[in-house]
Image (cartoon, rainbow over all chains, first blue to last red; front, side, top):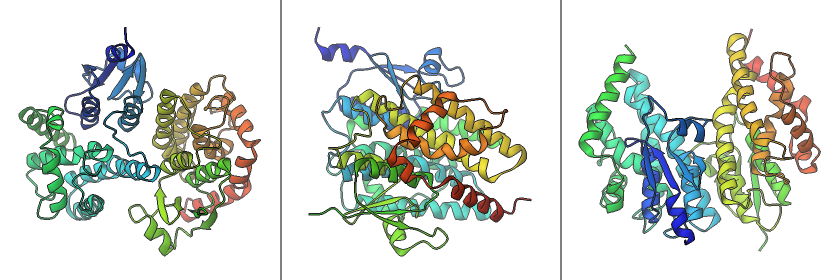
Amino acid sequence: KCKTLTMAEEVKLYGTWSSPFSRRIELALKLKGVPFEYIEEDLSNKSPELLKYNPAHKKIPVLVHNSKPIAESQVILEYIDEIWNNNPILPQDPYQRAMARFWGKFIDEKVLATRMKANFAEGKERELVTEEFFQQMEFLENELNGKDFFGGETIGFVDIVAIVVAIWFPLTQEVLGVDTFTEEKFPVLFKWIRKITEIDVVNECRPPREKHLAYVKARIEDLKSASK
Amino acid sequence: MADEVILLDFWPSMFGMRVRIALAEKGVKYEYKEEDLKNKSPLLLQMNPVHKKIPVLIHNGRPVCESSIIVQYIDEVWKDKAPLLPSDRYQRAQARFWVDFIDKKMYDASTKTWTTEGEEQEAAKKEFFEALKTLEGQLGDKPFFGGDNFGYLDLSLIPFYYTYETFGKSSIEAECPKFKAWVKRCLQRETIAKALPDEKKVLEHASGMRKNLVLE
């Protein structure tokens, strides 16, 4: 038995079809040609395995490699990149790596929260938070700086993390019927969105559109009725 | 070519402390620049336009921001001495996971413990100590979170010892004996003793913060 085969047999991903955090792990594994077993979690009824593998947060995604669990999507991405080093996701140079980690953190910790607030805030608060969101998008545009992708000529760590902006943001916007995040305002970002969503493996790892639309609609209805 | 290393920092910052410890462990010579957070320097605003926060490491003119990212950068650049992250890839992932846990679960709770009162403070203390207990479980019987050697997770957590010392001695809080022993071990290291400000100074600063928040 060769080692690669053993590894292939023991890679499991616990995730959900609609989560951008889960989908980014699928993408990383597919980019590297790593076969894996996918387990869909019902978050309203979490499996004993999930609770065992991620007791600290009880969240997906969780990667289980040879029975050892790793949680937190960006930690998982780095782990995958270190174990399977074909088609590297992170740069080799320490400074470029630091930059990639910085933008990844910025997206997950700042951009997502701001976007959520901007979608549901009202009046003056909405104005202010939307302005903050625009500033964040400008930072990202500047980072692209003439490159095809954040990773350069091919997609890398930041691109994989930023797919939430490329796919989830326009979709939510469509459901909400708003047009704050537009090509007019952010031509560089939208060019990147077009480029990245033309990539086959990216499209293999995105939620099916109609199902995703319906899901987001339902979630927004839940949120609206919960706040009344 | 000599390395030029500058650290923009604020002396009571727990995140700044992480970077100071990492630089000390590696024996890196650097220039320390104290920032007045009420009057941020043009350099800080230029080097960290996105967050405008300390710590910022400026290495040969290029800025690195976010303490966890800075420490990993330091480990990767000055790689010939005192490795901070584990060499085992799975252990590395675990160290990254737990530092993220500290930042998500402990920082806000710790801040609230210092800056709130009454029920809110009690809730924050509970949250802080629950997180600490979870982390203590990771320590097991090892001398350090990194195993035999002091490392990334150790230096990311040790700055929180002020919160533990100040609020952890009441009988209400669950005892964390392993954590206490680990703190003692850490404080015996010269690099840490030098990087951490005097406890009295920290307490004075914190009570100044509380006064500014006009807590009755």
